[in-house]
Amino acid sequence: LGSFFKGTSVDQNSKFADKDKKIINSTSWPEIFNQKVDISKVNRDSIRPWIETRVNELMDVEDELIPDLVISYLEEQQEQGQSLCPKKITVHITGFLGENAKVFMEELWQILLEAQDSKFGIPNTIINQKREETSTLKELIKEKRIQLEKVK
Image 1 (cartoon, rainbow, N blue to C red):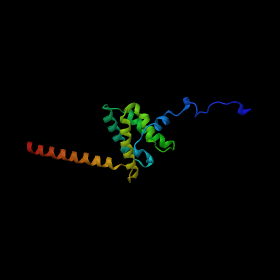
Image 2: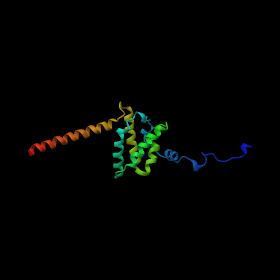
Image 3: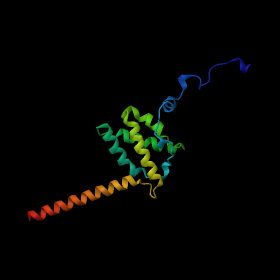
Image 4: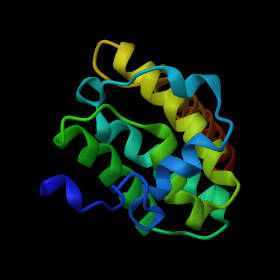
């Protein structure tokens, strides 16, 4: 009697299909997205400022929501025991960043790969950026001191 009732399975009914999966499968992705990132090895506090700065550059507007959204996606997938999926995150942020979403995610993925391979979970890109900022500030301070001495 049980085989008498037939219908469609969840997979056969498009109303229940995973929309993200369709988009992911129909889009070409950067090769770098095939590399796995273990977010537990990444110091998320060190990448947060980069995410905020980069999102604001791409949007030409200062926004707190999108960086928080990206960080929450990273943390959520880790908490659920899933490996990070840059393709899924890209699909989710495309509504906000448009075609810049893929560019942003590719850059972020490179930084995450660097971070997981570094000793303290901080990517070399960010370390080098901070060194340059420090060097620039030292030069600026030096110039200001010279100007002050000339005034005296």
